Image 1 (tube, rainbow, N blue to C red):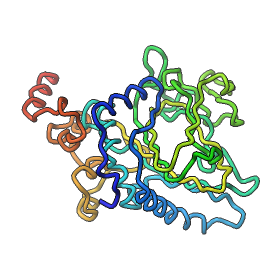
Image 2: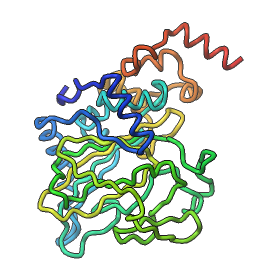
Image 3: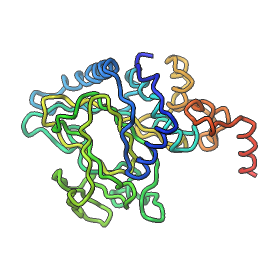
Image 4: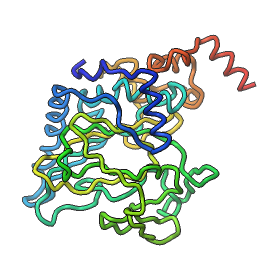
Length: 327
């Protein structure tokens, strides 16, 4: 492994603490942190892929870069997607190993030239919750909601921060504590001043002053890792410091959900990329359609090392339970 982080692990007590905060507040800081050596490798990889994008832009253009599906452009990011504490928590959140990679991207966000900063999800992000998108934003389908109107957990997202944000004006991730439990308010496409959270739920912009909410600004040290619910309201204002903000977001969802930014693996991928069994599973190894919905015991065993010991089950026990369900 290139990353020292590949040896990290959470105790059951740490898992309980993180999951309790995630359930209550919609986000949590992990007790682990990426090492200085890992940060140097990941920062260098981020800039190596961002600089060619910048070089193709005209002089005076915005310099922030966001690249999706980073697990396919650099093996270092794929290794980060296999971060053991993240897979432990995803296993807990979804109740078994029937989850895979949903999305991966990085953002390289320096201070922009005057007038170039935008809340465009690249040089800055307005207040928003991630999907599923509500019908009012143009989707013909309503958002899946529970009885209280909140959007349930569809994917769990991890933010890895490669540069220091403790100086306070680097465009830190911000969240509204407990907002994943509210009917979703969505700032995408609506006006945003950095002081408001807008909603399209009622058919109009509907501005809400963020001072009325429990807003948390995560001015965290380099190496910090934040996990959050996809329905959590979050934002990141433009970087106003001289330190370029480098970070990656990696998320996981149940295997019956289609990933956001990539297609499943092809037989050629498997033949040429030298992927581990766990990587093939997370990237969508080809299998019969039903097994994306009802995984076999062998499927679940792929990520079983991230389960708690008391939740590990034998193949015979699983098959008996599945047959009872199907009958």
